[in-house]
Amino acid sequence: MAQLVDDRKSATIERRAKLFRGFADPSRLAILGALCNEPLAVHELVERTELSQPNVSNHLRCLLDCGLVASDREGRFIRYRISNPRVTVLLNDVDALLDVVAKGVEACDNYREA
Amino acid sequence: MAQLVDDRKSATIERRAKLFRGFADPSRLAILGALCNEPLAVHELVERTELSQPNVSNHLRCLLDCGLVASDREGRFIRYRISNPRVTVLLNDVDALLDVVAKGVEACDNYREA
DNA sequence: GCGCCATATCACTCCTCGCTGATATGTTGT
DNA sequence: ACAACATATCAGCGAGGAGTGATATGGCGC
Image (cartoon, rainbow over all chains, first blue to last red; front, top):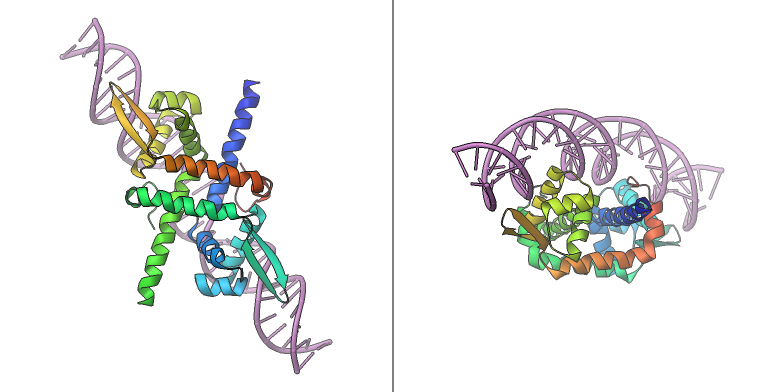
């Protein structure tokens, strides 16, 4: 039973970690940032983010599967948009936190600096 | 100059990504989660998270450098605590987002499922 | 139907990061 | 000063994920 509790606890943690990982990539953040302003088609995202088209598609697939963005077909375009305002909330939270810890984050070299 | 703008923009994105990466690990989330309840010394964190002691220390160093936790020496113990309430806010908001997208996140196999 | 544009998929490589085991530093009692 | 406990550091290994290039699918206009 303690085992059960542990499982449930760790399952929750794993889910959180997985969701955070969805945000923990510059390319995906660039895509999400662009979509926060307005819905965009893939080729528009390619222009603005300066990422390769397959790369953008791959990330969109990931974001779509995770439910962070949604897509609507429009003719031969596919328009992507932020699926839920809570995504934006989270992005704002991280900026608010960065206001406080930006210096430390940049100094931390436990993982590769950008 | 457009170059400058791009640099500034991407620097912001990189910082966000780096901060998100700080949260994108089950071990660090377990540590942060435990610290959300109460400040704890390292050996207590080892007990509760069931991680190895060097592992916990490594993650704490990372979290400390990033400014997400703070530490106070107390005798031969070192007590760690959440450094800023915005950390807790972020953790809560991620749970709020999970309420909506949990299913999708679990289904997404672009990166390894826990 | 054919060519064109928009998007998706796949195999592969490289790099980053997390964990472990051994060891070093530090602090407290006796 | 020494023993015991608490914490930090470091090298090395292994795995997961991001990017690329080539290619496949799908919708549109002529």
